[in-house]
Amino acid sequence: MSSDFLVLDMFSGGGGLTEGFIRRSFDFLGHIEMDRNAADTLETRLLYHELKKTDDGEIYDQYYRGTLDQQRFFQECKEAGVVSSPVINKELSVSTNHAIIRDLQKRLKKEYHRSNVDVIIGGPPCQSFSLAGRGKNKERSQTDPRNYLYRHYLRFLKEFQPKLFVFENVPGLITAKDGTILNNVITGCSRIGYHLDETPHLLNASDFGVLQDRERIVFIGWKKENKDLQYPDFSKNAPAGKIKDLFMDLPELQAGEGMDEFQRYNLGQPSRYLIEKKIRNDIIGGIRHHCARMHNERDREIYRIAIKKWNESGHRLNYNELPEKLKTHRNRHSFVDRFKVVDNNSVSHAVLAHLAKDGHYFIHPDIEQARSLTVREAARIQSFPDDYLFEGPRSAKYVQIGNAVPPLMAEGIAGKIEEMLNEI
Figure 1: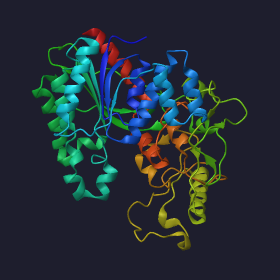
Figure 2: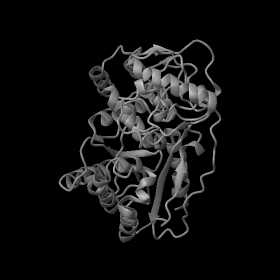
Figure 3: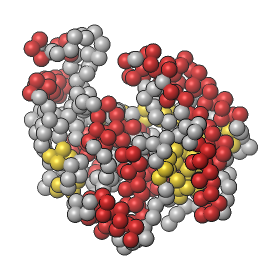
Figure 4: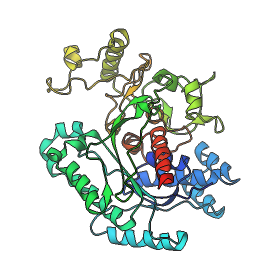
């Protein structure tokens, strides 16, 4: 059943934040995402949710299992009359904003007979605000045009006048360009009639039950006229599980093994965490995207050293501790923690889009496998359910997962937004 609350979804990515609001039954005017692969992922997921409302769910199951290709999947959805909210695959810019706004306003009046939405959600791409990225190229981070994508967000706030908005980003936004970006966001919101707390609120995904230490700024703003509203109190819900609970039912893989296509779970009972958090889906009966990268034997030997050290002592490998024959980097002073093992007995460190480039920072904790994480393992750490399909090549899937708001976290945020809207 649809909510009475209408959302405009900006910088949607592969749909992590979107997923949380869908779970709370929000309706969507549209979704804006410039990356073609992420837009395809989002469209696939939106159709999945629409199919769930009908008796046509088998169409998605067939696509997931590989008996339908992508083109045929979309065609069968069309023939069944299954339509999702539109995904606008365009870059937000000065030259495109007007046409996007005009088309959305037409749909708003035609389909919903109104002139505004209830909520705008999203966060501009965060690479230019990332502390890690800034550390690698300080000069470029100062001139990166992505520093100013928030201006498009403000433009849409002004045009669609939502009651509330959610703006998510990395903690590095606080100090980006010596704090001027943060100040511009706050003052920009104020000029168009919105209250935004001057002190940013940092939320950690692990407090929403996600098996990941992932801290993000989550701005929540509202119209100044709603003076009784306050930033919500997010109660902490520590994860009731460990990384080993996420991986226990997945087929064990050596480097280069596995496949992107459908494969069955391991035999045996899944962990309680997988069931309670609805990550595992026994209706479909298996997984996609569980294919290990091919690694050379030198890297695998480094992985084994890093895993052994971590599992035995709880200490991270310092690159300078490696035997000389395994060292290939001239830089021995910075990024000495470039090989990092996921903690099997706790929560993971934050999953990043950098996983698309190499897996050294996300090493599987099993020394027998000695490899980096698969797409499905990274998705599980981010709390994406197993029936979530990611479109595009493997590198694109890693980027979508690394940039996403974990769905469990998004669902918690959406619940508080719903409570706030009910107060207005």
